Image 1 (cartoon, helix red, strand yellow):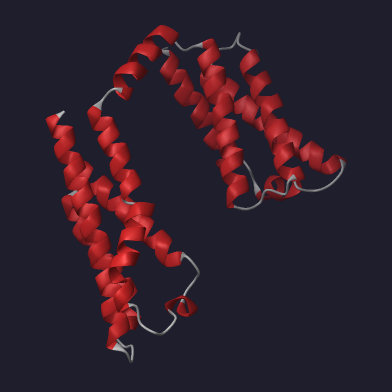
Image 2 (cartoon, rainbow, N blue to C red):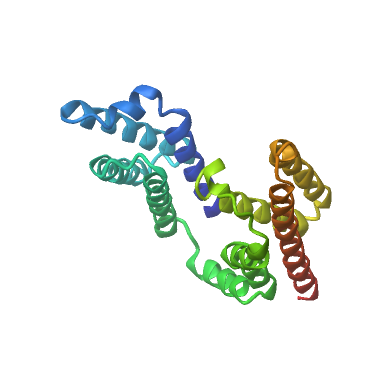
Length: 243
C-alpha cells in the first residue's frame, strides 16, 4: 500500500465521519453547554478515530486513531467555544482537520525525497502557473473590469434592492470559474449549457420588466463576464499547450 493511498483513505474516513456519520443529534448536541456537550463531542471524535483506523487498516498503528481522536476533539471544542456555525467557522474547521490529516500522513508515510522532487517539478511548470493566473484573473480583477466597463450604462434604479447583497458578484465568480474549468478540460458544450441556463433563470423576470434598460444592462454584464472568462481560458490553454 503506497503512502498516497493511505492519505486518500484518511481523507475518506474524515468525510464519512464528519458528514455521513454526524447525525443531527451529534451536530446539535455538541454545541450544548456542560458535560453532555463534551460527551457528544467525544463520541463524534471517537467515530472519526474508528473510521480512520478501519479504513487505513494498519492494525498496529494505534497512533493514527489516537491523533485523530485528540485533534478532532480539540478542534471541535474550539469551534463550539467560538460558536462557529457560519461559513467561516465551517471552512476553518475543515481546513484544520484536513491539515492534521495531511501532517499525520506526511510524518508517518510520505517519502519526503520523492515528494520534494515532484513538488519542485510541479512548481516550475509554466502550465500550472498559467492555470493559477487564469483563475485569479477571472475573480476580482474581472469583476472590477466589468464594473468599470458597464458603469456608464448603470440604470438609475437600485438593482441591489431587488436581490440579495453581493449575490451578483458571487454568481459572476462561480460562472467564470466554471467557464475556465470547462475550457481547460475541453468541455466546450458545457459553456453553452451554462449560458443557456443562466439566461433562463436570470432573464425570465427581466423580460417582463417595465424598463428595457435593466434587461440590457444585465445582458451586457453577463456577456462581458462570459467574454472575459473565455478569453482568459483560451489564453491559458494556449500557454499550457506551448509548455
